[in-house]
Length: 174
Image (cartoon, rainbow, N blue to C red; front, side, top):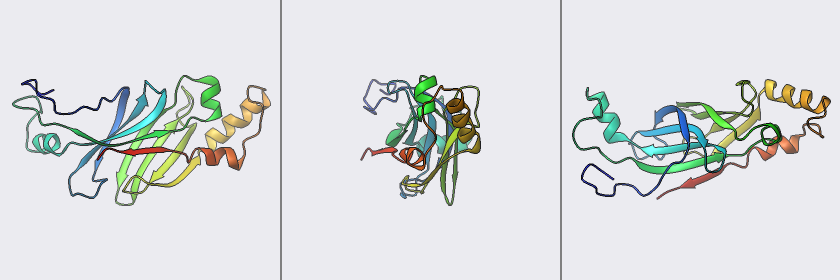
């Protein structure tokens, strides 16, 4: 709702979003806000994309975003990232720990173990949010081997298991 009580958006983002960047992901020439964190409803890493040009333009013009009527931020898309077996075994959720937009695309780092930020799955997305590549960091592979040797995990890391991380869930809100 805006200050006058009018509905400006009917999508609710549940979670904690601690990482952000700005870029035009839908090709409309308008800057979008990319928020990375964790969807607390699904207990899963999430990237939310919002069209925030009015707010960003106001801030760029020297405003603080807190005065006058507040422009709406429309949710454009969301991506949920799958949890690894390590994360499912030892954690309540995985979480986005880095978002970076460049001309080549978007990099999203998803941490799979609390206290070990380098034990992650790295996602490279096309500028239109389609998956270009996903890979385990060396630290993530090492952690999996350690947990297997200590019998916390009952299987070796396989290419098939790593490929499961490519099953991101991209939803466009048009």
